[in-house]
Length: 279
Image 1: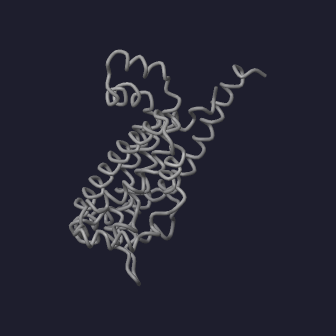
Image 2: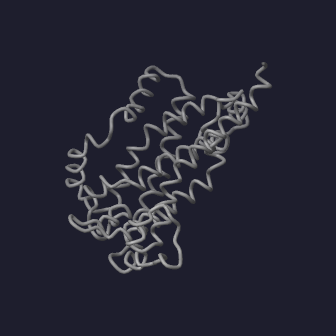
Image 3: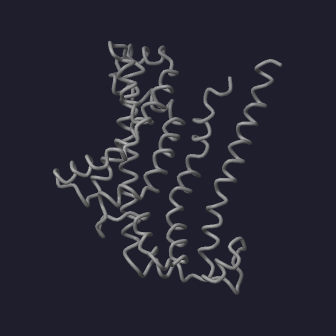
């Protein structure tokens, strides 16, 4: 069977696999949201059932909004996540462009060095990172989290974007140079629009671990003014008693930005994941 005939079949299989994975991945989200609208007794008695007039309750959301500054936690998470994604995309794209466009001695070694963070978890350097933040006075600031998350996301961003940028036509870039465009203009006006699917993929893969992270907010920014949503939700989890209504309500609210981002970038995300898989 020719490639022209098999391409639609492979495309359909890829989309079916992604759809199946999405359904499986969203089931825990569905249970979390559904149970957040139920009374405590109904959560434990019928965790798989949808709320009914007898079991419906907003006590979890009322508790979240009354105890602590949840809106402030949400704002902190949004600021840290958006700033980190912007820096990761900017610096990652610039480094990927340099590695894919310019040939110089040590190009391969530089690419391997920049991608080393994919294999070495940044959490191994937690003690050194904390000492550095203390020395610079950045403990309990959003800046500390932004710096750490930017460093965490750059290796994967460079690895993905450099592969996509190698596929951009050299003729297009050379035509831009002939027309007098600077390297910055070529990068921002010609290359970046052509790698939007890859940028969307990197943005989603970068946002999820940042938004859901508990480790670095607990270590670097545990203060009340700098708590993130994930860390703020821990106030409802006690050593002996857990307020499950509030926990599920907080998690349901925290899920919303990730879901909105996925809906916005879903088409670009699928294009980025499947690019190169079908000829």
